[in-house]
Length: 277
Image 1 (cartoon, helix red, strand yellow):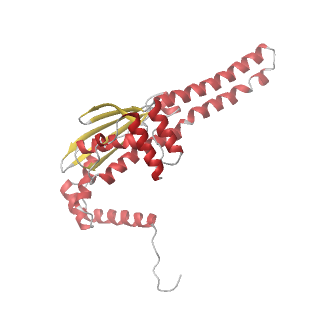
Image 2 (cartoon, rainbow, N blue to C red):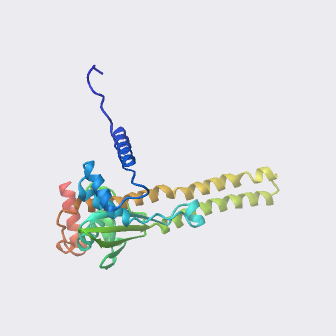
Image 3 (spheres, helix red, strand yellow):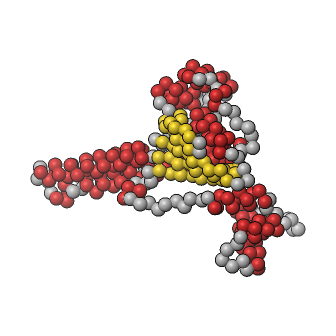
């Protein structure tokens, strides 16, 4: 590096510098155990953070739902039966609700199961419409992959907040996928137990007869633990839906009623995507 040229700071270092500077400034003010919202806004203005972002962050903290620790044996050994994501976004619940419905119809294989003001549930899309969506995605028409394919139900709860903000909470059930992994692991373990039992009945030596047992138990546990990537992908799918809402909250949504209805309308729309791709 040439003399006199200042060293560049990467993103990780920048975050550490900003965090440390904020800690130092806060410690000089000696705010005690807590700050009022007005003090937080004033502190943010001093460091150059726009008030709208601070207000959104305060609302998000106020409505934040703490994730519960794994409660049952299946949650601890195999994985959770449901995942959730939440965020405070700009916009009224009605507009955000329409945006969510459109996202699930276009970017995921889900259709509305039940819809009420402030509450929506979706179920997996099946039959010919799902086959059309999968085939067009395989042809390269879909720009984004399906992230919620392992979920058996998705729900959304929307609550209006002050300042034209709304709290959006999404949850997805993966109990069906968890049951499949538990069943597969149990089948492998049972096969090992049966193999050891048969060998003992046939008069094999005990050490030899018990040899398949730990192998089968290990393989069965591995099958059950393979649920983790599916859960992580589902979690990412919920966050992606919230990202879209957050990025599009200032744009007018296109209502679902403007699209073609029925299988023929879906087929025509998917064919247009293929031709444009």
